Length: 87
Image 1: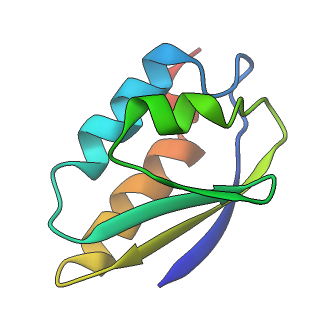
Image 2 (image 1 turned 45 degrees about the vertical axis):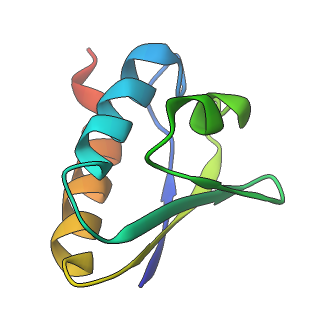
């Protein structure tokens, strides 16, 4: 299961939103990765996510495979679309 989303919070995927993303992804049993800028990284690793250097406006593909993939995808897409609850 794959979905394209756009990072829309002003500061991009810096440490705080990356930590929230990893915490959310880690709640699920499915394998979860993020693809951006020609790289694919494990979405359950904060260092991997930070290594992408994602900024506002960057498009990323969330890829989820596993028993709870639907729930995981919904939670992660909602998190990105809510701008990680930043103002």
